[in-house]
Structures are given as C-alpha cells and as structure tokens.
Length: 227
Length: 163
Image 1 (spheres, rainbow over the protein chains, first blue to last red):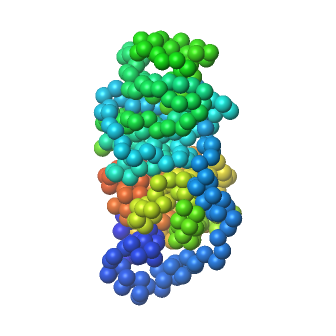
Image 2: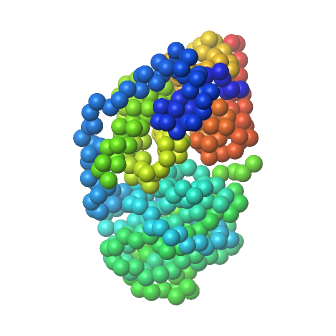
Image 3: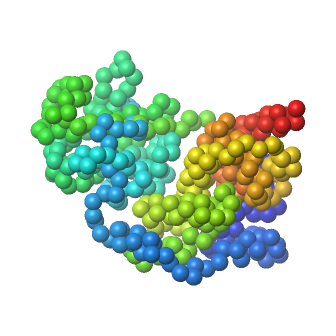
C-alpha cells in the first residue's frame, strides 16, 4: 500500500546522513528531482541556538533532576509477578521525560527501558514483551525502598526489590525486570520508608500507606498487544 | 558532551524540523515540536548511537509529540476534500500537504493514537510498512492492521461527507 517509487523520507534522511548504503537509492536520488529537492531543503545549520548550549551544560552538570515524581503518583505501573529479575550492568543516564513531576521534597522515580539492546528513558509508549525495565530513584530523606508488583485484585502484591538507600542520593536500583507476555499493564508500587521494613511490614505499609511512615509512588506500564 | 550535543544538533535538527513540518505545517509549532524532540533526544542515551537508530527514534518520538499537539489543537471540522481522500488512499508517493493534514485532523478524535502515528508515518512521511514497523517498534502485521483500521475510518468519513 505504501510501496512507492520514491524512497520514503526516512530513507532519504538516512541517505543524507550516510547510513543508507543502497546503490539503487543513490541512483534514484541522483536522477530524481523531487528527492534531490527534499534533500536540498534540509540545509546546513547556520547557527546553533543558545538552548542547545544549555542542554550541553545541563548534561555535564549533575544537578538536581529536572523532573520529579508525584506522591501517590500517576500512571505507570508495574511489572508482572512472573517477571524475571535481571541485573543491568550499566547505570542509566539522568532521566528525561520518563520521570514524573512531584511536589518539592518528595521522592522521585524514573523508568528506563531496554528494548532490543537499546536503553533509553521510557517515553510513555506501550512496552513489549521481553523489554527490560529498570528504576532509578531519588529518595530525598528516605533511607529504604521496597518495590512491589501489584497483580489482580485477588492476588497479593509480589515483592520485587528491597534495599537501603542513602538519603538525598539518586541511584539506579541494581535490579531490572523483564516484561512477560501478558497483555495487562504492569503495575508497580515503589514504597519509600525511613526504617528498614520486613516483608510483612512492607506489605502492611503498602496497604495502610500512612504518610507519616512511608511515601508511595505508583507506576503503570502499558504493554503492547502482541499479535 | 557539549560538543556531542552540538554536533548532534547540526546533524539531525534540520531533518527533524522538515519531518515535523510535514506533519504540522511550516511554522512555529513544527519548530517547537522539533525542539522538544531534540531536548528529549539530548537527555536520552542515544547521542552516540548510529544514525539509523537515531532517525528511527526521532521519527517515533516526534510523531508521538505531533499527535499530542494535533489532538490538543483539535481544529474545527472541515468538509472532506475528496481529492485529499483519494490521495490518502493512493499508492503514489505521498507528499505532505495542507489538505492531507486537514483530513488527518478530522480523524484526531476518532482514530486511536497508534493509528494516527502509523498513518502519519505512512501517508505523510511515505514510510513503507516495514519502516513504520521499525520506527513504531511493531511487527508489519500490526502496522498493516493499524493502517487498515485507519482506512476504514477514512471510508466512513468519506461516506458521511458524500451523503
């Protein structure tokens, strides 16, 4: 249906960047006025605007996160109980839009996704079976974190991770989870506490959610329906 | 790092702006979406990735942001342009046009987000189904299904405007 005589704009863009090693494409571009016109319209950059320089400055300065999470947050949710636990060797980079806003002083959570070997901040898109998900947290004054997978109503939450944190130190959790083939969104609750909680205490805190004791961040990760 | 971002800007931003302009028309909004996409790109881990991976990411992310913008905009409905409809259904090389965009705008509220993204990539950017699948990280069958579903909506729109 979309098989055209002209290459797609994506192909042309890749040709311009030198990443499309296709002799037929090069021949076509050589002979095609329309495709040459497209490439000609993509002129060189005459001047790099100031905001690009600011991006660079932000990248080299490990300042406070630009986006932060919301108390009992928002959307993204979690990993199936059956999800395999994995360890990612490289820490994720500072988070981007995959983070959520929060009130000042509240802990933050970011989601990083590894899809087909490429890691990137989660962009909100549905995830695929086999994708690996890793969380990065900024605990503020909290010292412990517990991550639960929240299943269906009748099933108890599953403990995925429990560990100590250094207050005010942003860190990637040293475990990642691989999404299973279930279509249902993955739901996670990240529980921050000021003391070490036993599994039972953490589950109780998960249910009670006393804000004087814990801070909960809920995540919902939509999953792509596999054909 | 500053150099890497500057180099990436020089390398990718011009084509990113053109890509956004095909979807949103020339103007501030296309520039704005291109800028937002690039800022996300600068924060991602793709700066040192090869151009093939980067272009796929830029196409995917900018299309997604553009759909959000288009939906937010929700321009007032206009009568269907039969010529534009015919072009959307045709196999000819799709060149972005104001009519095509206007028609897509009419489907913003009824088509799903994925259908819109697939339609924009296929009909406006001229990507083949295999390329749409690569950019959207779907398989070809799913892309085909999205486009068929989108076409059905177009048919209904066409029938309504024809009645």
